[in-house]
Image (cartoon, rainbow, N blue to C red; front, side, top):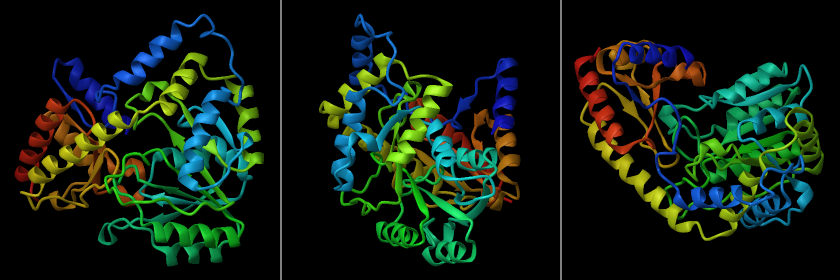
Length: 374
């Protein structure tokens, strides 16, 4: 990923205009409601005071309010901690594993999953999400991997998935979490895109004692710079993360936490619905363009803010294509190998950026694909 970013910077230093579709940034979908709450809370005389390492009580209660409804479970204040969005992944892994343990990680999957496991010397066991199967969970394969490796302490399920832009079947999730509970294996459920599922009938997985939920407000509130998220789970995990917060950065800014708490407890459905509608419209528009060429293939997104595109028919790897697309068309996309070995022949684009540039970039990509049919 950093190679393509560096290449894009070099092109821009030469005076070229580059269309950036590589970074998962939803901030161009301007959220006035949360912006006004941030301004209001920053102007408060107490806004620059310290906060508790486990997070402001109002924000923890706000997260709990939603998770109690989502999970139909009576969580207590000891089951939630406020933490920077991306850091939550590393903190959870550090809390539940020891050096030499193993974890099941999705392939393709968000890079921080793999990087965190590597940092804490936890062995990575990959479970593949196959395009031919709509990227759905292979329950039998996951069970077999757990049965054959007694060092596996946890599995990460990212639902909906980054980079795939799809949600997983709830029956599969429930079967896996039940099996893992019986085997004393944690399930880390990365919930970051849970409000960006474009199926109104989609429900929620059954809560079990071995599930640890990770959520970030970055994407569905169009405010990635807030860096506010939470972990919901067993008290021992929450306590461990609170200690980590205290040791490494003390606390998140108070005014940001209080603004987030107000937002979660206000009626923010109008923005959320508008964002969903806009994403659905963009998916339909991009699909109309891309399906005109046989050079690429993809599973049409039903969640999140990404298209995951198979480019093997071009005769190039995802990395090779990304660099050529940047040079020839001025469009920057993310090579798929950043998300795991199965992503070698894929690229990911983010569809939540500036709409005019997105349309221009997609059309340039289409012309490039037509020109480069392998």
